Length: 256
Image (cartoon, rainbow, N blue to C red; front, side, top):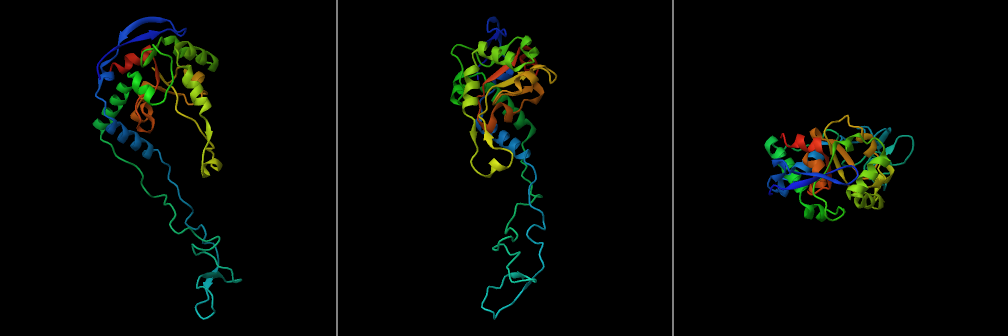
């Protein structure tokens, strides 16, 4: 992608100056590599899961054998109820998930870095950001770059006010209105709601007060430059996330 310039905005939404984007934003767009790196990142976050090895097997059972006109399943020794077999109520699972199964995926170090730079370059293309479904006011440059005063905003109301003045608040509304109840068993496993991904806020340091201010906004993710990866820049492997950089964060990206 070609190198271009972006405006630097104040927290009040005024254009302060214009700067050239770092060369990291001019990498070739490679959706195949981005997708591979993002999917690998998801796979490597999976937590080991599986039932107890003894689940469904805690019975004293025996087989009656043939000749009684009943199915030859295991039955409780203190009765005639079938137990333990996978096709019986309360029995073990036939093919349960194994905690020792390895779901991780390997990605070459250079390939992972190329995916990150390619996803970073997609942030600078307003058409790709729109194609991903994000909403923002016309005329603002991508990625949105703000003065370092933005990093000092420690309350949610101040962050929302700044994002409104920058012209990206429609995406906050999109994420808030898009919250829905998950289909399936996840509802009863602590993940009842699904919320669309919204703005990615990139700051220069992990200790920035804006972490507290932006943390509570639906769909908003806040990271330092060290935490950037293909999975953060292109969730689900789809490039073109709406991003807000602080001026210092942009300078740090320029040092890559």
